[in-house]
Length: 397
Ligand code: AMP
Image 1 (tube, rainbow, N blue to C red):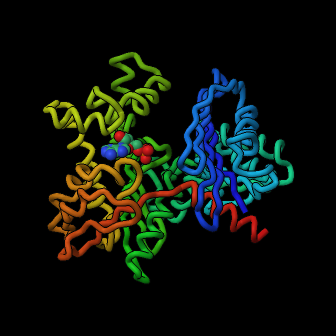
Image 2 (spheres, rainbow, N blue to C red; image 1 turned 90 degrees about the vertical axis):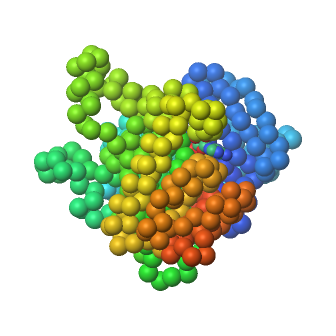
């Protein structure tokens, strides 16, 4: 059984063909510049990489091209599309409707459409991806795996904003949280590593987009992202937490409208805005090493914000059994892990600096023997979770 995992963006399409039982990835890739010209980056079983220019006027041609490359000529990894059992779609926003992954029916699709105002950039692209798959592979089930679903267990006091309650009732204004698939997977791995019945885990998903999640007994009780992915940590190009008063101030002083503000806070801020160098942390770390002041400040800001939330979530959880680091920065940037943990020894968090610096694959522990709290590095695998959820739902159905 093979599952095709799709993540359709507004002008892109990420895909993986996965065996959900073994986690083997048969092929993966990314179609970019859909509707502009079209480029596909394709990888076969992690050993052969291709870059192909291919006109992709719409997502339909992109998905057709993906199916074609999987089944034809020397890039063939399956004989025909009958070997694909189902399609798992990453869907950013499931609102309050979806607390877990679900088989896609007419009703489910309609609800994802209803949620467009909450995710105007993402949900329309996901819907398009789903509809094209239903058209091109009419006999195959489709499953939606939501970024928000894992956080639906947050208590009211954590998901409500301190604004007039009518706006929650009428306009669904609340914290939803994102990266749920990753937080779910990583916290689950951590709980297995802890081998404890009752657990308090804090997951730091630090990538281009970043969020932290407090997980009590396997359930999300709070997370840093909010109504949109803008809230919380300092990210690649997002500001994270900011005084809401900044918005009218900028509107008045710079004559910006709401679209320009959204662009400013989402695409021009964060690591890119503060450092003035790049949204890619590797470049900023390099400049900081060479003494660049803004690069250094940017890294301190980022780490302080992470520390602030770790402490806050330890307060809410009443301690922690493990702090987990995952995603591009969390898995690879030992400097950031060390900076975040240093100074938190008073909480019982002691990082082993040597162990932290070692480059190893798979799940690992980087705390000192004397540390009361475990520190885990756990590579995230969102596509695998989507494939597994899809497989389990299809098997049940
Ligand atoms: P992601 O969104 O999970 O792919 O993460 C992307 C971020 O991870 C970018 O800011 C990269 O600079 C960062 N990253 C990846 N590898 C490293 C590394 N070896 N050291 C520091 N940052 C890294």
